[in-house]
Length: 247
Image (cartoon, rainbow, N blue to C red):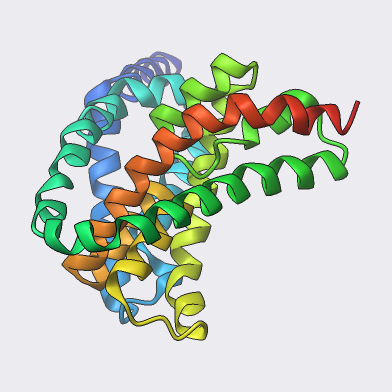
């Protein structure tokens, strides 16, 4: 009798853990808890909602023995909203169109310099540390938003899943360091602050930039989009030369 009850409970639990709705709700709840922790901490960067939500979800998946594929069946519904959310960034950017027209030369130079350094530094450091060619390729688009980064990595022979993980790590680390580093540099211009954050830390950084103010977020969103475009063209050109240095 007891074995039958335990068997039934186990079967029910397995069905529940495989239900996409459960993981959709878990993702939303984790982020809500992250927001609560962030507010309670006095908006400390180390308690940023995304980081807290990631930790909570990883721990939950490990404790329940749930694989990522099962989780994604529910989480993909949130992933779908990334597209509309990215497009919505054009609204605050449109409000800055006159300012943008005056700064386009400086922003273009910053984009080329920052995008190139992001690719070259990641590949060279990985190569010096003895990483495989596939790993170096996977690292190249780490400062680009996930959909573009995975596409670039797959096209060039990298490991898309590894690239996705590296992109998330880059974004989280970038958002954690943004305020402090910009404070040390004593940079006050919202456009410069936002563009720097978006270039280095893509979508996660852009979320942090919007927490600073609307103008900073607008320029961060611009940098995120332009860096993705730049990397898609620059990475295939730079990678063969960089990889040849470690043959």
